[in-house]
Amino acid sequence: MSRLLVVSNRLPVTVGAAQGEAIVTPSMGGLSTGLRGPFERSQGLWIGWPGDLSGLDDAGRATVMKELQALRTLPVELTADELRSYYEDFANGVLWPVFHYLLDRIPLHSGGWEMYRHVNAKFAAAVAAQYRPGDTIWVHDYQLLLLPGMLREQLPGARIGFFLHIPFPASEVFRMLPWREDVLRGMLGADLIGFHTPSYARNFASAVVRLLGHEPVVDELAVAGRKVRFRAFPMGIDTETFTAPSPPHAGEFQPRPGEHLLLGVDRLDYTKGIRRRLSAVERVLTRRPDLRGKLRMLQIAVPSRESVTAYQDYRRRVEEIVGAINGRCSSLTDSPPIHYMYRGFPQEQLISLYRAASVMLVTPTRDGMNLVAKEFAASRTDGDGVLVLSEFAGAAEEMPEALHINPFDVDGMAQAIEQAVDMAEGERRSRMAGLRARVLRFDVHRWAEDFLAALADAEIGAPLEPTP
Ligand code: ADP
Ligand code: F6P
View 1 (tube, protein in one colour):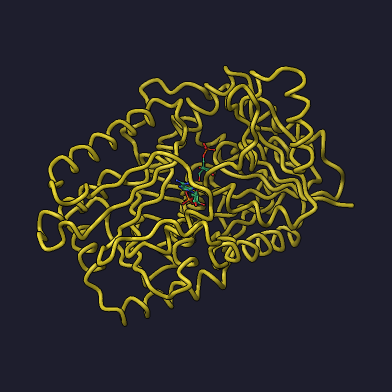
View 2 (view 1 turned 90 degrees about the vertical axis):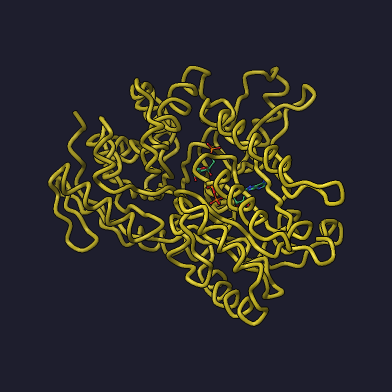
């Protein structure tokens, strides 16, 4: 029987340790939360990194392996060196800032390329060992850009899809990468390449024309005798989860009477615009004394990539600004305006927070899609609530009823927050109805089905020329 082989850097579960015991918890982030549902419906196998297993003794290791197998996952273990160079230095130190247009974050000496190749090759070997003719391979995200090309060399007849979960930058930015041609050739090993938005697909096409000289015809490229298709497949969410009634214990969080609750939910990542968002909230508090004591910002930030220095620095700077704003805007009678929590929340609690918020603030400086925006809309079964959304999030292209903001314009963001707080109920409901209709219609199952149907249609051609 043919199977779906999903391949991503991180498995949908991560192995960690608590009080000396191994624990297997759901992974955080859009890729895992989004793909989990479609994967469960498939008869597939998920291949990826399980987290750090090095501290486990033989018995602990055997238990974890059994658990991973029961979840239909296959671990690709990485050494501390591999992880540092491939994941921290290259994928998150170089590719992440370039693809998010944060050019001042590119390190002076960008190391890790060789290890990035090596780990992609390690994934290729793991996939090839599992592959049976007729299987469909679906590779995900920027950590594995070389994998489709490597797989094409080893498995010329395989059906290979690739989906990028982050933006593909303008070719003018992409070409700053010293390894730009290798990266493109790696991606072109796939039969179908998916992006969140049409503009990312256009950027990709323009990079391919400029750097490799292949001219696309509509959404198709001829590469060494093979056809490679590329187009937008905007990712949705598992709407069933977010529209289900909250269980009674999840509703512990209630806004205070008469309070306007602003909500931010993010991985703690410097692309998420958390500091600018908090500055905008402070500006509202300064400009609108009538809202003091009535406006509360709840910012929950799930720890992410804590071993990467840029993330440690960003956390420190976020926490400084929270302290500074609370110091400036608190009074003896009111509680501090910014309520900040640095941890992950179970999904049902997250949903109860989405439901309690008056205004959801999603203000990344760049974001491939941003599923939080869609989760908020889906959760609002009451039809109320306002979404303030960055125009630099992929989701903005599909969510015109949100109040769109430019996160680099803190004043404009403050004005949008005031507009959201003051918005009449009729307008709130009509905007939310538009948002919900689209989010509910284009859910993550439809996304996966559309991608896999297009991949099933792909003609599998001759192999790529090996990369030099
Ligand atoms: P990214 O892919 O960059 O992480 P997305 O917005 O697309 O960003 O996806 C983030 C996912 O992580 C969402 O599914 C969201 O529910 C989840 N998430 C974000 N913050 C938290 C948190 N503090 N606790 C639990 N889940 C979170
Ligand atoms: O959206 C980008 C992404 O890398 C996803 O692949 C993943 O869901 C999320 O960010 C979390 O990243 P990491 O696996 O580095 O914790």
